[in-house]
Length: 352
Image 1 (spheres, rainbow, N blue to C red):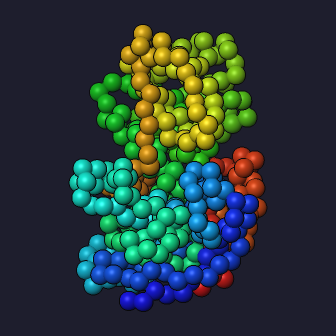
Image 2 (image 1 turned 180 degrees about the horizontal axis):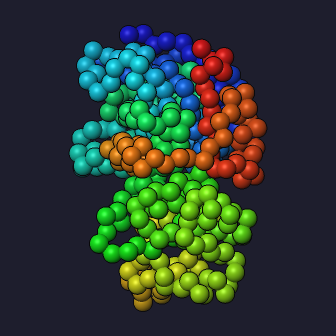
């Protein structure tokens, strides 16, 4: 079927200023789902992408990769969804489907993965994200939003949430008590605390100041709070953690955090620094410690997380805003002035 004309908000250059933009969706195929966008999360990665700091960008660019919508059309071979279903789309909309990663349900590591925006569809058309009135996505890259989960609550789980859930899964249902560290209390970090607590871990939030201590301990129910700039606190916590999930999307020293790990502990990176990170490897060798990374999560894990979230009755800490607030939202996001995720209310924002 021929593509439909839609309205989105696009960045035209590295200034990252967004304004209304009309474009045509790609043609729909037999396994495609067309969704009317209801909500979309606002991620720090969107800002980096619009500025061209992560990869070369062809403008105009319509961001948004935490997309919740309602199914309004399905292809003839779609068997997972029906009209009216509430669904989600995350960071990916395609992969090769043939490689080892794809065949092991780890399509996020496919070398031919296609990102939700800023890349190119298989038909050569540009991909555009959820800051728009509608999207067309292959059914494999669409997930079901559980009935018990409010759609605006689901949006941050589709990137930030699964980014935390995927690496933490390895510690779930452990036969020993797990002591966790969450470094950075932002969009990913606050979800990581909630997930780790729901998995039964003893959770220490690590932050550069005491500014978020009340939120961490009282609202998110973390077990401990550690100020990384306090040498005495850091020394007292030496060799106490089984893992640290590093969510910080900026340059930072690693050695203070490596020292917090027990022998055999892991420092897991999920935040992307645009500058190289440095460390001495002696503590890794002497303590059998490891540095590793994790990239978002698979489609299977994304559905797992949504079901887990609904089952546990968890709530994201979000601020819902209209589309015409988006530039102000990014200004505040850059100042770290949000608790802890903006979610755009796309439906009803004069984009139809």
